[in-house]
Amino acid sequence: MTTASELSLDQTEPRSSILKTLIKRGYVNQATNLAGLDDAFSTGIVPAYAGFDATADSLHVGHLLVIMSLRRLQQAGHKPVVLIGGGTTRIGDPSFRSEARPMLSETQIAANVEGIRNVFNRFLTFGDGSTDAIMVNNANWLGGLHWIDMLRDIGRHFSVNRMLSFDSVKSRLEKLENLSFLEFNYMILQAYDFLELSQRVRCRLQMGGADQWGNIVSGIDLVRRIAAEEVFGLTTPLLTTSSGAKMGKTAAGAVWLNADRLSPYDYWQFWRNTEDADVSRFLRLFTDLPLDEIGSFDRSRGAELNAAKERLANEATALAHGEEAARQAAQTARQAFGQGTAADGLPTVVLTSAEIAEGVILADLLVRAGLAASKSEARRAIAGRGTRLDGEIVEDAERRINMLCVPSRLSLGRKRHVVIRIAD
Image (cartoon, rainbow, N blue to C red; front, side):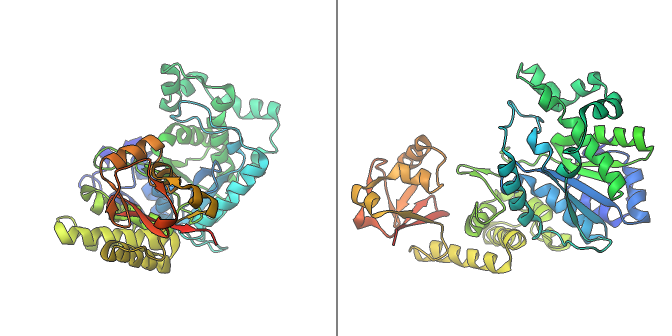
């Protein structure tokens, strides 16, 4: 196993361009047999996969490190394999969770799978070529497994003692949190995925987040035991901001990658609001800008730093939603911040005539607009003089929005805005 602290390019310069890129840009947390992986990259096309369970109808920014890693692989001439967990979603990954995931129906899982497909079409090129990405669904092979055969052929290769030693399991047990037998089987099924893909499409590398290390190592071991082949694993870091906050969460919830879950404008704003100390790092991870150009932003201050943040927002939004959506988001932000009036393109909250006649309490409206996660959080924001209605500070959390106030622009802080309109 190789950890991030041992990946110094001063000690050992990788031969393969892709490994150099992954390390320099900051995508590597842990890896198995880094030298062997470097050899594989240097001698041919490496099919590499990452798995994504269909627990929602969109992925979010927390998945983006792995998605961008697949993108880097394809840019370097290797083959990304996107595994959608239509089968494993029926169980739910217990890794570092305090409780079991809710059980989803087959209809819900199918709808989520379709929503997730849309994400990858913007980051990868799919097709029949040797380096074109492909998408597979593990429901196609897990759904047909027979229990007795699985126990005899696969289960005998797993040590319960070792499974209990993995951090993802141990953390649940040490906290006396329930871990069902159903969830305990998850790592066996994920390991079986690696075996299946190594045989179906010659996958030689599995990539995943830092919390997937135990599952990935189990898959590598299973392939070695059954197929007598060496395959590799690589995890990306657990990404936090410089202040220690978990990446991809806001007061309003997850930062989704699909436009029907989060508007391109709000996505643009998420990146524009990046903490100063994170700008260069995020440019390396989440944009295609050359490293030399990104290096010029490392010591940016003041207006130059704000320009770097806008560049980050533009580039990241263009990848997820297209260049036109990024341009419109930037234009909307300039209008909203510069003119102080409601601008086309801002997120909209539509109130019915009946709601307007009765009046909607301001704290409730902040929650409904996604500007606050709860009514108590909304009240704190209002009490802190952080809420404006058409540019005027509002300090009454119980104020009712009525006919005299719409259409209006509701703002939280200087950079988050929604437009309030009446339904036609």
